[in-house]
Image (spheres, rainbow, N blue to C red):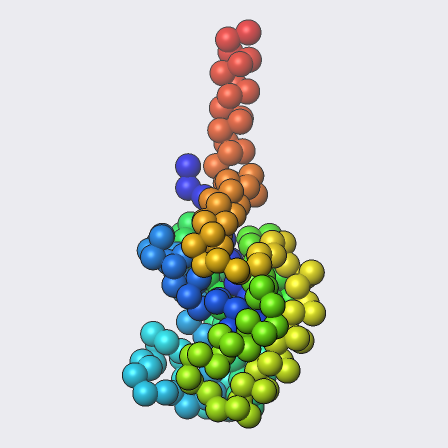
Length: 212
């Protein structure tokens, strides 16, 4: 009764709670794997290669794209980001779910890929634009210019909300987390994610015919 894994895509504008909810989702089910992206940006203090990101140079990244080793990729704030395909395919066949923290460009690429039938896409909206700005400022990670760029990019992200299967307004972390759990639980039960059902129904048919 082994199921196939899901590709859980979680997208939102910066500051809408995506990273926090991704962490909570994995705390709820440690079996959910996080897709470790490759990037050309330098590692930040405390980041570990292979755990936080696969840090590569531009030449290596472009070669991976050319060789179709990337499930999706994008250019963001002067750096390349992408999701290596091989570990994702392996996880799906093993029945493990893979969580993607990516933007709408990456989501569209995955939804058009050979693994599209396993995709669960979820978009998080902020309760308001002033609240989104307040969250970015309260993090204390970026200066005014960076925050202004993120706010400008946030509308570009929000404008693609209708490209997702589920859209949640994250005005309460606990409630949104509960909604995410419900969605994942239901999607795992999709008939397309349970290939064993075909053989089970055939067995039922044989039993029915023999009984008749």
